[in-house]
Length: 206
Picture 1 (cartoon, rainbow, N blue to C red):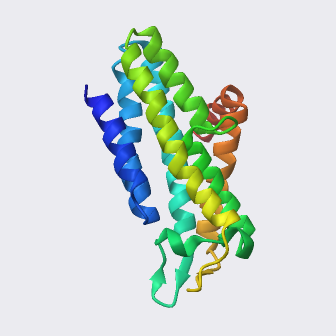
Picture 2: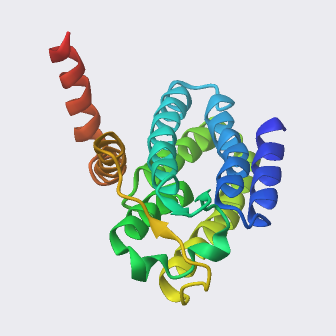
């Protein structure tokens, strides 16, 4: 029940937002519902998929907010989505990176978000909570709409009159954003190999 409510409420509230930070904040409620879906499956694969999803969602979130911090005007950070129009023409690399994170949130194939959602829904189906899986798939479709809406805004609309600029990222933020992007793609294309590599690296680091 809680998983269904959080997925529906999070998606419906997020779709009405015109502020990119608020959109991501409210959509996180829906992502909490996806996490709960894995937990209520009450099986080993459900727990494992929830942990995996938490990790990939966290990585993409760090990357997305790293990008948001770079979009500024004379007053500071710009989060009004209308002013992000045409960002893909002004700064294609930054817009492309943000698109990658949005596609991962939406669960589009070849991103870590797709692997995360697929594994959670598979575990939940095996656990017999089919109704939650159905709601999860439907709310994922709603979420995909408002994430892709931002992509269309950045690449297929003319720049707004009020100018925004992309500030030069610090070395730390550059490393953070690019690392998040690499992990998002790697875990989407080769999840097993990448996780094994990370595990081996952690063991070696000890």
